[in-house]
Length: 229
Image (tube, rainbow, N blue to C red; front, side, top):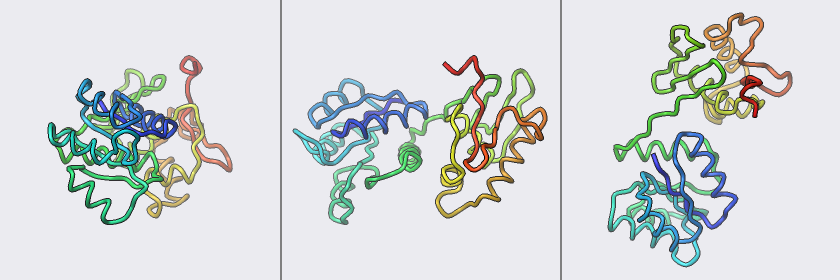
């Protein structure tokens, strides 16, 4: 899947691009409306993530011109949250919008939802860290050449997030927000979920080698030394 990210804030554009690449997208960037239309014509992306406030040609005009020629899904990024702006963007053919600031998790969820609605849903990226392979689409985990083990949706989502950030320690709060959303989980629920996941993937759950606990901070997926470069 190919995504075009358009934002004149280059730092934010890089963050969005990085987030989408982690989900398996090939990403092209543009930083003004004129460049956006040129890159769109050249690359024919599967998704356009488009800021409204752009130099040269504004995002609304870019969206309208794309929609006049194609059904490419368009996800608008905007600091404007008034009803008129939202209605205007959707009326021009945008498939959805996100109001800044937003979290990477929200961006990915919105992008995947747009692609599902338009029949272009991407296949979740298979994660590989050392001997561990996770197939999120099948919710299967394989350690080396062993038989695959089926995970629950929450177990798969947690492991996917940990493996995506292998070698880093993720805070308890960040993990809860990613897995359950801002109001759906707590520390006890996360501890139980980690315990169940360890029982399925660790040779000895009492002495884990894949999912580490960092006291007072959170959890991390241990990155093998051979993969640390």
